[in-house]
Image (cartoon, rainbow, N blue to C red; front, side):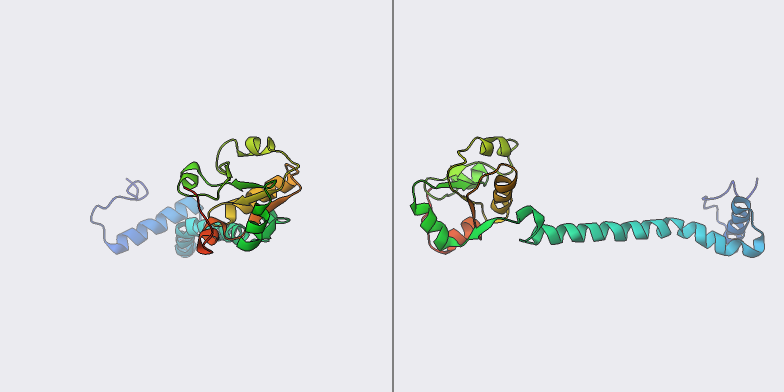
Length: 185
């Protein structure tokens, strides 16, 4: 039986026998002479790494760009959003014609919310449909837990759904509570 047929078996062969087998396998596979087969054997073994390494670098670069855009408040997803701090949000809330829109989950909402807020879950399957049904002539004061979901909701409401007056609470409910503002449970 040829050495090629024995490939991959650990039958107590010495290191020299394994090298000899690799050389004969390389010359059989690549058609080269024994004189040049050793570099080809290394190249064949490194083939996976040669292709996997650039692919991993590419994926890492994509993930890095995704993280940069997700964390960047000026990313295309949130451009055009009117951000306001807690005090400005509270002043706008005092006008009863304005609507406080809480885009957190129902569980978060029940745990504590701004008085009079309407809850539509940003992560819900029908967020866009429910939001589109709202009165576009009103001003919406949008918030979530920390400001990320509400910024995205405002961007969607402004651009796609054509709501002219949406304000995002910077820092969300966490900033609201930290400022000592009232929370209804």
